Length: 234
Ligand code: BV8
Image (tube, rainbow, N blue to C red; front, side):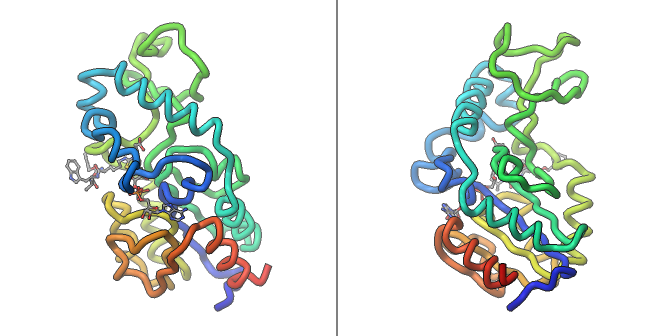
């Protein structure tokens, strides 16, 4: 199978693509939600109850993300984007790390937000995350509490991002999904909302595996560069 440069390629990534950079996934043994209770750390109610506890969790993740480097899978997606003609590639990532951006990815939607940005819970101002804050939990100049600019459970996804993703699902030729267990909605349903050629790459069958024509099991850092070389003859 060869991808013509004028094909329309949509890629979706999850925590599995950052695993070989040393970042924890969520639902695997030893993963984030195996160690912590997401109800205590990744919901608006949790932040309301204890902003300090939530901030400690995200500050530690920021430290880990800053110490991590993009891996071969991130770099392979950058090569794929460069192979495609302008406007013919979109990456939608559920990941709140910035490894895709640091690898050089250009057309990217961070559909669950970014742990590397802050947003004011009062006025909605978005700021780059600081290395340290002069008070804890940190506050915005307007006096409102700052929070990580991520989409927590029970929060709606950004409507513009969702519309762009839906438009691409309806028009793309290839939908390549990497390293996501297919447990979190509405993103887990994307595979059923497109007529594209659908390929999954991951360590194990995802929950939504019956939606894919091809499931390639293995590490993204190994399987993805091979697949992209085959698809693009780069
Ligand atoms: C919404 C940001 C509606 C934070 C995340 C009850 C109450 C409220 C909502 C719900 C509810 N019940 C269900 C819902 C819906 C809920 C949901 O889906 N819950 C699940 C638990 C059932 N969804 C929501 O709440 C969404 N919002 O529905 O809003 C609404 C509408 C209007 C008005 C109000 C509300 C919001 C969901 C977003 C939550 N935020 N993250 C943070 O990260 O701190 S979710 C979190 O899960 C991350 O974003 C993560 O990316 C995402 C998905 O996880 P995965 O990436 O798939 O990671 P996982 O560990 O599961 O899998 C990794 C895979 O990689 C594995 O398969 C593994 O085999 C593989 N792998 C490992 N190593 C490698 C590898 N693959 C390749 N190579 C390797 N080396």
